[in-house]
Amino acid sequence: MLKTLRRKFVLVSMALVALILTVVLLAGIFFTQMQFVQDYQAAIGLELSWDMRRQRRESFWTNLPPPGQRPQPAKITFTALQDGNGDWKLVTPWMQMEQDTFLSLCERAQAADSPDGFWPDLGIAYARREGRIAFANLQNEYAQLKNSRWAWILVYVGALGLFFLLALLLTNRALRPAQAAWIQQQRFISDASHELKTPLTVILANLDILENEQGGNQWLSAAKMEGLVMKKLIENLLFLARTDEMREPAEYELVNLSDLANEMSLAFEAPAYEKGLTLDPGIAPDLLIRGNADLLRQLLSILLDNAVKYTPKGGKIQVILKKDADKLSLCVQNSGVYIPQEHLSHIFDRFYRIDQARSNREGGHGLGLSIAAEIARQHGGTLKVTSHQEEGTSFILYRTQS
Image (cartoon, rainbow, N blue to C red; front, side, top):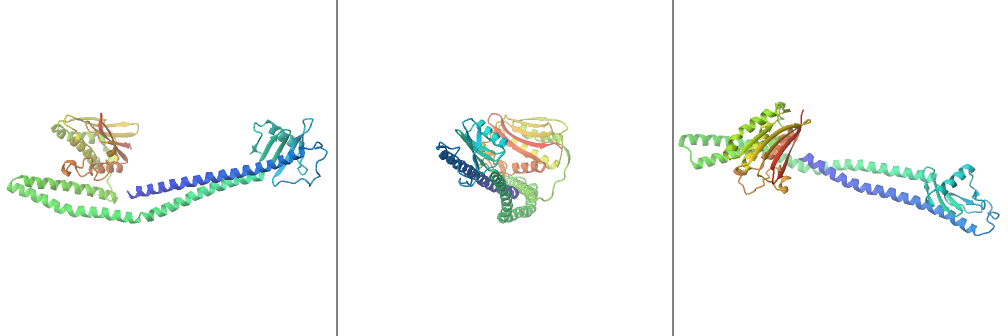
């Protein structure tokens, strides 16, 4: 239970941290990209605005300012103007460029669908107007932008790793009191069960002797029945306590589950018949699994006992064992019984009973299905429950065959 609680705590905390860090990462990359776009648009805009002022002069081509007198922007920008013959000319005095490269840029800008944009493969931005094209060489800036993206990603991954380690550390520290309390609780249950088992056995033996000597009566019968109920409760608590403490591991061997299911079905035919129920086994032959026969027998006994106990008179109980591919499924289904959906998620919880009005002798202490689920888990399987008003209730054990 503590491992599950620790795992859930870490997963929830990491999910929240990952969500926050992802938002920060995307926001950082977005604003960095927007800043890059705004910077080159401002540089292009400055280049175009200067050309627009110069274009108002009629003698533009003969009155270009001498080199060095034109203000140079912070970005490396240059302008191409189209003369009367339709030829493109580079009019930026400080810019040196091969004619073929220059004409290739002008043709690409003319062919582009958008009048302005950025070419990532070249690291050059452009803006096209009538008779002129402004360019901005942003290779260094674009390289810095890509490096900043990788920096954001590395920070993101590093922060996730750091928070994961912190979550593990804080979770271990936070759960120490709960772990200590859990261990003490399980130890108390185990020790108390051991201490109660011996005197209870003596009491039951004395009741048997008293019944043999003086004959049976209702008080002796009631005392003996309650003693047997208490004995069963103690045995169940001992089983769960050993499981929680991971003590006394079961010995596994190759078990013929088909023979075991047939054996238990036969054992419950008499109780089912007395209650007016039909027990219909549908068991595939010679299905083998590796497990503990006693524990599997106990699991089947719990499921069949519940089916006989809660199925109304005239109902039907089915025991189905089959194999699909490499997966075995063992189903105990009883008709006429419907478990409301709000109870299904708690059906395997310890001490949980659907009908709280029943006495412990009639409905048990709510430990049987918990034990059955634990036995299934120890055998590498999963015990699930489904319930429908028309079909009844089914407890199904799924396990991969080995």
